[in-house]
Length: 214
Image (tube, rainbow, N blue to C red; front, side, top):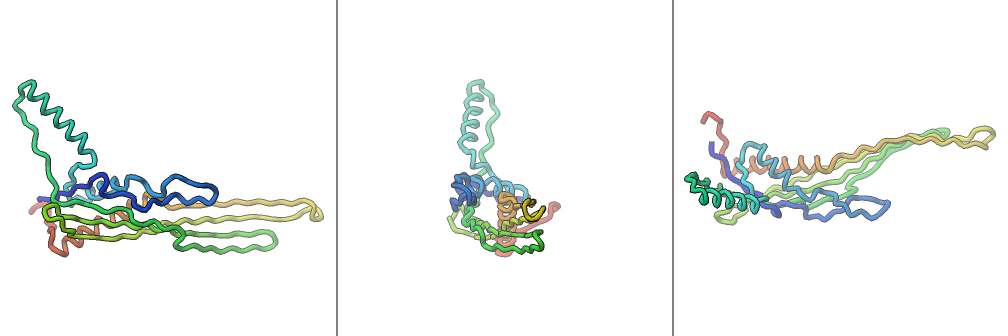
């Protein structure tokens, strides 16, 4: 079964938000999103088993290696020739176009006789855009937009009491915080964008799905 051949160039799918990692204590220069989101796109396209993905991110290295092989074979008069590089009919472009923090936050708590407990949560969101472009015409064939939530939650308990005629203070605190991985959320968003691209392409007739026996 012939599959659509797609290419992802190094700068065609990247983080366009410039969002820094949220930190209320000090200035952080770490990015909130990985600087190589194209790795997730290439992985999703390859593992979809629907596309043939050609190497373009390391094209310079590939070209140099092919040139080295060609020169060596000419020097030693080997008749075996390199196969031509497979060219792509489609380009996958886009990137992470939005990262919003504190889209939704809240919590609840209670205290009685110096003993209390509380729970808080926060919701961030990642937005991914994926375009499918025809190499022969330059036309944008498909465009999908996917938003994925990133959730964080914390639970804490504390005890605050006076003993011995209110002269001795005992204070105990404990808690746990769980943050959803931004990279896992980004991977899920990219994989969803690839799936929607496949489904929209099938619906519009850009490609068709056949069984392996056909």
